Image 1 (cartoon, rainbow, N blue to C red):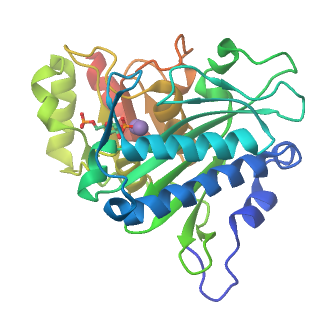
Image 2: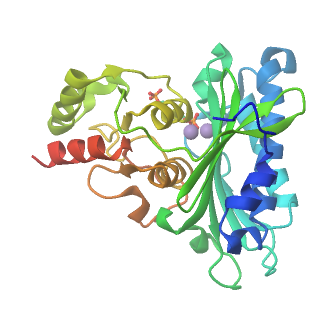
Image 3: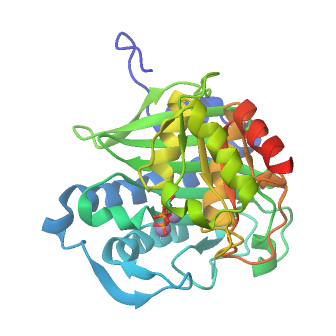
Length: 325
Ligand code: AHG
Ligand code: MN
Ligand code: MN
């Protein structure tokens, strides 16, 4: 946590000092800054919500087959424009847009971003914590970016970011071997360093799953969750970012399994599971489909879904072992 005695560092200061040199020298700060700018806009809308006219839905259906909330659309606009205009992103993909957005093939646009602009949309209208999630990749060459170049396994991410708009607004950045948190200061309007070198605690404090889906789980998943139920308390916000952030800071395991109705589950690989499992692994945790490491999955489709089990590595391993019994 920030030490009150020291001057609190800004997002830019800390990333410049701690991110791998090849990223800092190549515009990574610009990408994280664009995400932070978009997050400030979403935060401003979220805090005013009804007063800003961002409650309710647009009446539109997105590629996920879900009704688009007004804030989903506003968040999409905020992050697409900040990432497209930042000058370091070659292409981006967004949960709310069926097709990727191709910005520039110039060599000075080395990054690719896949993101969920507003996560936990069912919670917007009831003032419960929501979030935004970003997977960041570096282009491997100067070849023109195509949709295929966006379909890379999560282990190739160079960084991941999420924002949780909760009782405070916290932006978390992960790069190789390091995770830091920054709290939005309403006075200065800056994200200030508040969580130094986050590591998931060794003790799991809770399990997090929608128990209402229990009847649809396969028997081995029912047995695995029963094992967790005996060992831990249940915490479930219904916003992936909120549940994940709690588990990262307090220890815990989050599960959104596949089931008989939806074998691949609900959550999306590219901009929910991959970035959060990247964060988890840099903080000492683990993330799996139940069968394989999430970050090793080779995506076939931009919006493909995946079962997700993420949190304390020992508990994740215990669930995987139980599922294999
Ligand atoms: P999104 O709002 O981006 O579509 O994500 C919603 C997801 C995720 O945030 C959460 O973990 C999950 O939906 C909750 O699903 P259930 O309501 O089915 O539990
Ligand atoms: Mn989401
Ligand atoms: Mn979303």
